[in-house]
Length: 578
Ligand code: FES
Image (cartoon, rainbow, N blue to C red; front, side, top):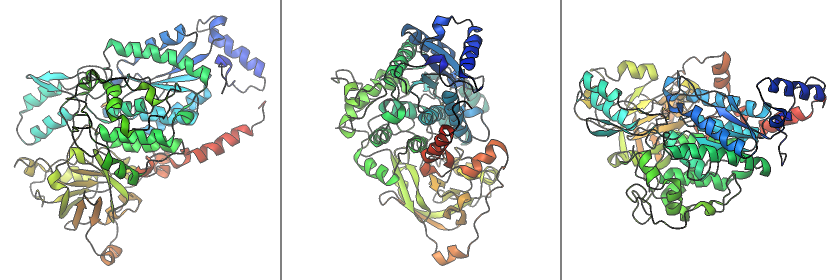
């Protein structure tokens, strides 16, 4: 990588005549009104992820303007460019199947277009993982700017924030505690500003982890989307991108196994989203690194939960920001982290820890001596029902269900679930275990269906939680005793496909076990539930053929570094004047 940047002359279009290609590019760039002097400056690309289908990114146009200001002030040429934008609630069947598509889009556009560095602007759920996966593979200097979280709102004096309160009120509505008119009023009050979900969901978890990984400027992850500080952060990020051009530092040089481990410990300490484990595994995979679920369990035993945000606690992201944000968390958690890890700017994490804790709101970010829990928020479970692992967010679960043996009530897939969950004749009691099959990455793109609703006949009796098991995911804003990401999934031949109604299942959080209590000989006789017919054409066809399981981040098998090395080798073999 150049130390000064080649600007617009980077990576010329292949016409067989490089001088002609440079001349033509300058000429066409001039048609956008740029002077020759501007076209000779280093170029900072800025991802444009605003979309009419992405409410969380409503503030992106203003952010991009502020990034441009920072680039211009530092002597560069800022050029924004569109990439896929994933608005979580606007995508069918689920945004998860498009994360890898967005990552490919980002990688190829960052690589193909003449930029010396890139600012990755995003926030909604899958967008930060996709941007980082793509930029990691493109291997150009890059820095992340999060869109920031939404502010909270009020309903009849009660504080509301998307989307833990969305689920809480919907559960009350299903239980008959709210009228249609009331749920309509709640609907209008849940999400009222630009920004990402206001709790410790996937978007917030990823933003905080990426700041701890040193991939965005310190202090910027938690600034509310509508706060003026976020625009100042955007301006500073643009300036920092110019610094990256000088250093040539890329994600590959910044992110080591220590960085990944720091991110995992942070996830445990914030009691963050289960989805973040999948996204971190995918990011690590792009860099030849790994998220090891056995290691996660060891870390979880030793890492306290310090942050008290919904869905497991009481506060919202704006409270986390005003409590001191990631800097305060680093100050409190520092002894558990490898502070020698580097950031994109080359500083050590230790340099970013505030020198004192004169102002940290201890109600939101606790001291390690008085944590919310002494152990981490997430654990991995293993056993004959999940040979490659499953995840439980124990901080969001009911401890009375941690050591549980119960009868399986099985749903064969998403349609079966929606057809029968509220059937008054469903044979189910609150002591049973709800099991959902065919909701994993290959079967259906791994939607957030792991939060199986409590059957309405039980909800109306006041049942609030049951043990639920699936190969699906769950929104980071949800809560309950919910075992997710069972691997291998049922559609990939996992034992989940063999579970039948009435089988006994045992979960032990203490032993980290998840077992189907059926004789092996009986299991060998059973035929698995058939997987749903998979799409074969287009993007979904490609996705279905190549998606890996949850422990590998649900990335595509041909996007791993070995595959990339092969691709780069092919490019290098091309004749110079082709
Ligand atoms: Fe965008 Fe929750 S819907 S972060």
